[in-house]
Amino acid sequence: MTMARTALVTGGTRGIGAAIARSLAAAGYRVGVTYQGNDEAAAAFRQETGIATFKWDVGDFEACMVGIQQVTDALGPVEILVNNAGITRDATLHRMTPEQWSAVIQTNLTSAFNMVRVTIEGMRDRAFGRIVQIASINGQKGQVGQANYAAAKAGLLGFTRSVAQENARKGITVNAIAPGYIATDMVSAVPGDVLERIVAQIPVGRLGHAEEIAQAALYLVSDDAAFITGATLAVNGGQYMA
Ligand code: CAA
Image 1 (cartoon, rainbow, N blue to C red):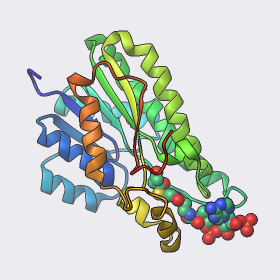
Image 2 (tube, protein in one colour; image 1 turned 90 degrees about the vertical axis):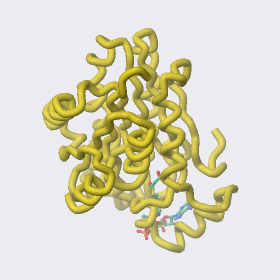
Image 3 (spheres, rainbow, N blue to C red; image 1 turned 180 degrees about the vertical axis):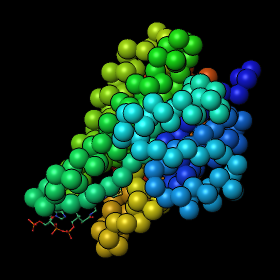
């Protein structure tokens, strides 16, 4: 890397996104992160890491256009995009509301369209790009209580493969990481007895660490990973072997 590349991580002030942002910064990239609502966590993250934070709703296309322009003004054009922002609204389908369905599709799947749509033309012009989608084991195998989340995460995989094919000749790779159950706020929200049963199904015998996802992301965005595109990398402790 001659000059530090600019990387943007959505949902990057907490959990997996924060671990990815820290790893990228430690590796010398110019890093920005987005967040949606938790100002306190964002301020703490910014203070501790010195990483620039930008607040907008990645589910909103117009907001992405404005926000990515701000990132570009501050850090330069986005060369590496990690679509990590995601939410859960778990409920069995027979109880799921249209609002729970739409919120998850908007934030977890439409956000990928929004962010990639706004950054891809610049990547194509510059003939370089790295896009990583944070998908999920539950988009691969399904999960009770997550019809919305699993649909969005499975959708990301089809999106990834399509955009990978379209941009392969332009020096742009598009890959997905499918984390298993990682020790974050999101997984802490799973009822204790349910989580205990899930951990019992993980061959490695524990939850994953956010840093273990970050290491996978770091590799996929590197210049060395130019021949890997359209791939889904499972980082799940052996819980699901596709
Ligand atoms: N297989 C089949 N059916 C099951 C089941 C299983 N393993 N577990 C529960 N059920 C069924 C029950 O039989 C029951 O069915 P009926 O309503 O027909 O009797 C129903 O599911 C229970 O549903 P309820 O709505 O009554 O239960 P609830 O409201 O207490 O909660 C739940 C259900 C929301 C699914 C809850 O169990 C839950 O939150 N589970 C965790 C889901 C999960 O793993 N989420 C992952 C979050 S972390 C994340 O998303 C990160 C990532 O990428 C991995």
